[in-house]
Length: 306
Image (tube, rainbow, N blue to C red; front, side, top):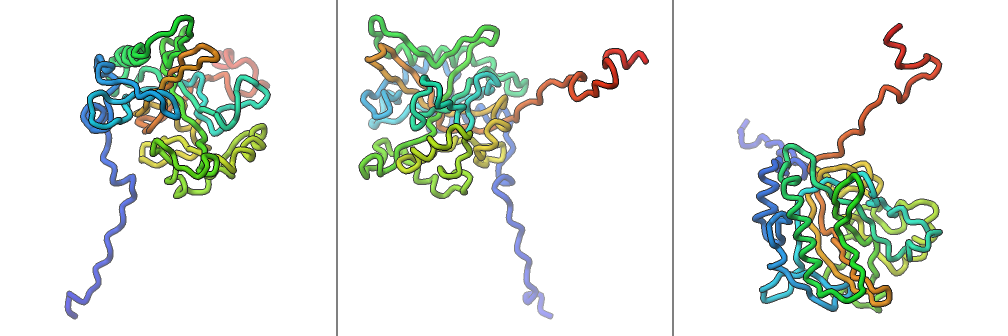
């Protein structure tokens, strides 16, 4: 038999995750500092490279200064997502009975970014104060109006230190709601159409109290899933947001917006999520020998002495 007649079995196909090179703290930091399309948030005095483009539909957008074209100023870094005030859930814990939550169509998911506690990614903690200084400087680029309150992205919590509020708009108006026009910023959600059914508006997993409101907005709005990816670079499904993100160490890319609300005399600043990649999963919660014990066995503190 001619050896050339023997069919060579096809090489096994590698999964997408198998093609991803292993990430090290050094490679992540190098990406944040050197890759195009953004600025490392821990770089000192970033405000000198930025200015606001005023009058955008979504507010005044921070853009890169000195370019021949207007480009969104992207800030990126490594942070830990706090377990406190975690609202990166499919419905953001929206409560229709709370008048302060506003309209469901305007819902913003949110979480708090803190300095990372990972020993491997120690630059996250080391550079966090510089990140906060940069965000504060971005806010100071806006001339202050007398008697206006500033709503900052920088949050101070007793016993928790400083954190950064990161938001994500869950809905965007579709072409029908906009009179048949596409998104003026070129950030439409046409790619969402290629996602599986678990990302559809009609099957989006909200609490029972929100289901009627979801049906009301579905005809004129598209769902915008979190652009959040796990360690294998797979888009995280909505039912896994809490399990995979709450307490995780993540690489975050975000934009920066300003809104001047004359009716309430407030300057509101927002750090808006553009992309998130999990670097390390959430650490397990502390264990306790007092949990899952049999109460009929008597005091667990005395059992060792028997």
